[in-house]
Length: 364
Image (cartoon, rainbow, N blue to C red; front, side):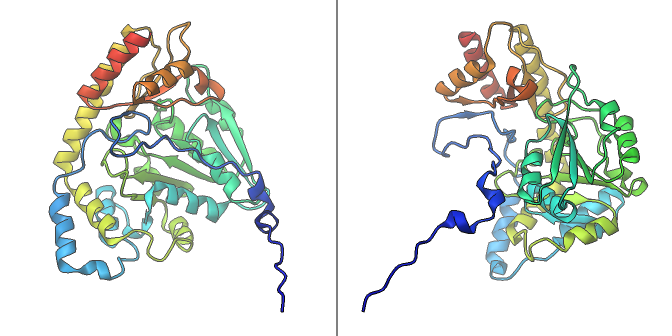
C-alpha cells in the first residue's frame, strides 16, 4: 500500500497580515562571555540590590517553586500602591512593561482604530499596532526641531490610544508635566504615559499621582532600568480600577513567576540602595555629557540613563556606531527620521564611560 503525502504550505495557513509584518528589532545582545562594553540597550551598569540573594535562597530552601505564584503579584501590588496611595487592584503586575503595553493594545485596538504618538518615541508602539492585525492606523506626529513634542499638533489628533515615553526615548527629553496633563485632559481616548526612565529625572515627575484626576490615563513602569532587573522581566501598569479590571481579563493566569515577584519586592523595598545607584547613574550621565560636548557633540538635556548625541559636522553617526562596534563597544543607531543624525549612548560605569570617550576621541 502506498501513501501520498499532502503538500504543506505554512505561508498559506498563517494570517495574511503576518506575511508583511515587520517585528520589533531589539538592541544587539552579545554572549555573556564576550568582552564587550555594552552601552546600547539602556541597562543599568550596576547590579541589583544585594538583598536579593538571601531572598532567592529562601525561596529555594522552602521549596515553593513547585507551586504556582500568586495570580496578581499581590505583595508587589501592595508595596507600589502604598507609595502612591492607590488601591492595589489599580496595579497590574506584568512580565516586563512590554507585556503591559501589549495587553493595553489588545484591550483597546480594533479594526479601523487609530493609535497616536509623537515621532520618534518608543519604537515598539508601531510594532504593537501592527501586531494586533486588525488594520489599525498608527499616526506618528513628528517632534519639533528642538526634539520636544509638538503639543499643538498632538492636541488636534483623534484616536483610541495616545502613547508616549515620559521622559521620551530615544531623545531623553522630558516634557513639562502641565503640558502632558493638558494633553491627557483633551484627548478623547486612553493616554499611556510610558515611564520606563522616570526614575532618572526629578522626583514627583511621574503621572501616576494624576490617575485619580484623569480616568483615561494609564502609566506603565518597569524594573528593567533603574532597578537593574532587565534579565528578570517585571513591570506593571497603573490606571483606574475600571480600566485595569478590563485589561486584567487578558493576562496569562500566572504571568510573573515566584522568583520574579520576590526579587522585585526586595528590590522595590531597598530604597537606600536604589537611591545610591540612581545617583551614580545621574552623576555619570552629566559627566559624560560634558565630555562629549567638549568633543563637538550636540546633546539635549537628558532625564534618562542615556544620551542622544549628534556628532559634529562631517562625522557620520552610523559610521561612528559601526567603528565603535569593531572596537567591542556597542551603542545604538536608528536609521530613520531625525534619529538618523544621532547615536544613543547608555550610561555605563565610570570605567566604561572613560574607555568609550577614549575611543570616540581616537575615531573622531
